[in-house]
Image (tube, rainbow, N blue to C red; front, top):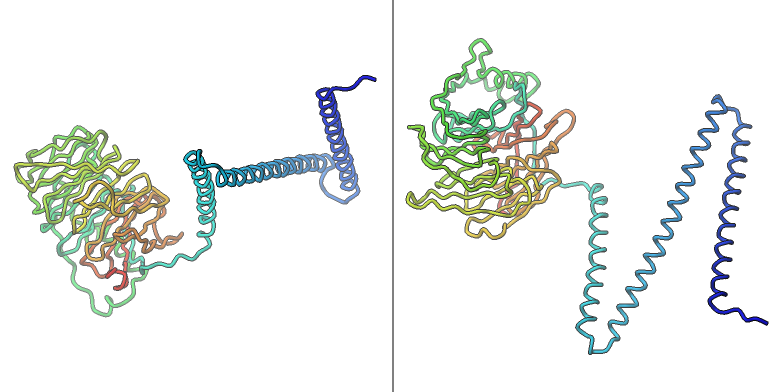
Length: 471
């Protein structure tokens, strides 16, 4: 009697398994056909206003959907089995590592570390994904009281920049057809940057209207007051459009750039200005003679912003090359430059604070606080969910205002702690990208202004508790 070998017996068993598997599939298909036919008979017996052909098509579609869900469910079960198998294997390897001999201790310790790191990474990823879901259900507690005070309308296009005077009377300037606007530290003079490769200096005269009665001032702002302020912003004077003052001829025109001038600012003292352009250079001009004093080159791509220190001859320029540079003009004989590298995308703005700090914002959705004495790494990093545009820092309250592409404006302190998010709904707040923010330290009603692509500027009142300011 011939004896069957082990290999042939194994092949025969595998063949029988394949046959039984194929038979089970045929039974399943026949069962599905019977079930679909039974359902079709039940539907035909029911009263419905739908045509029979349409009802049968719907039935076929629902059957296909059901089969897709069944396939997904089976795949999910298989994946779960594989995960359990891998977990059991990792656990078994961890046990063998612990009971191994000392001759291979270093290698096995390294393997156990890699296993633990993999497990920790999985846990961290799981916690991060679930925390996003859980955090959306939590009520965020604001540390600041934010209130919308007034809306300023009148522009026919988006507003790129906004600025407030540092001296009395308080004047609000918005830039729509131009890229930037900055006021002189002490005089009624404005500096604008334009897309025609020039910067202009304008001299204006503001005459305050006659004070209103006390009873009218003490009233809460209503719709008439808002319309009145909008009229002032659009026409330029309280009396009305007939007596609207306008400045059409600049006192000084600054030329020498070969590209769009994207930003400009006054140096301390107001005798010199700095401009930033898409020609990858920043220029330093003398206001009285309009002559070019220095050309600051070194950026690899277009510049996006420039800012000056309020009390020292320091300039910071931002660029699309993911860096910002600090230019030191305190010593007339030595003009040093320091490069800050810490962002992974365009640096949209970098501004000074009162102390020795610089705050930079970027399209990489981060804001970093830097110490001028230590440029290697930031002292604080703020991570957001949207690109950050031209930021501003409050001198008195030490608060950073972050305007975002996603129409939000958030407030953080210098250590990176979130204080508040400005209220936004269908009736109030910005409806498009917020381009810029500016603080007003001398105004008690509106101490923060924002502007955006929705062609309006908004005045906010931000109140921070004294305890948080001390921290």
